[in-house]
Length: 61
Image (cartoon, rainbow, N blue to C red):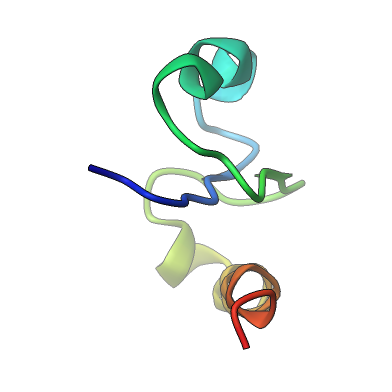
């Protein structure tokens, strides 16, 4: 069971329009739509990815 999730949707992802569907089955506490990056976003845009991960986990401090 996923308790909390925070998807990062990058510019080249096809997942942008599915937020409403994702919210039906998951507890989404953070949703980001980022301007650059794609399937390998952590390698392509490491700064954006790291900042978004930090933002998500900050709420659990």
